[in-house]
Image (cartoon, rainbow, N blue to C red; front, side, top):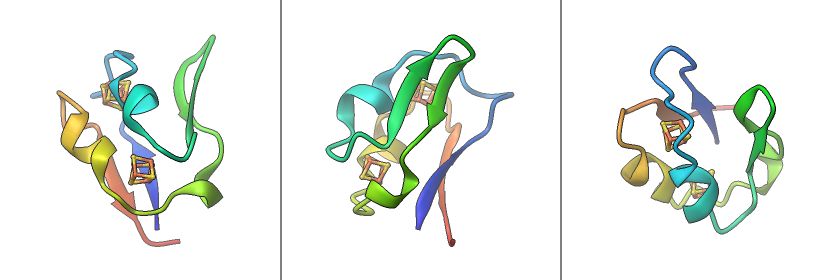
Length: 60
Ligand code: SF4
Ligand code: SF4
């Protein structure tokens, strides 16, 4: 599994970037993106940390 960001709901707060132990997310000029999905260890910390519910883990 890996995280998907709903760009409509994302407010670019970077909570997911800060909490992820696997460096899955990156803060880019276009906002926070999932740049290394293969590094996800499915801990779900990002889902818990996201204040807007923009993050969901999905099957590959
Ligand atoms: S589930 Fe865990 S490892 Fe995977 S992206 Fe979220 S915080 Fe990172
Ligand atoms: S924690 Fe949620 S709202 Fe914040 S940058 Fe990540 S996906 Fe966007």
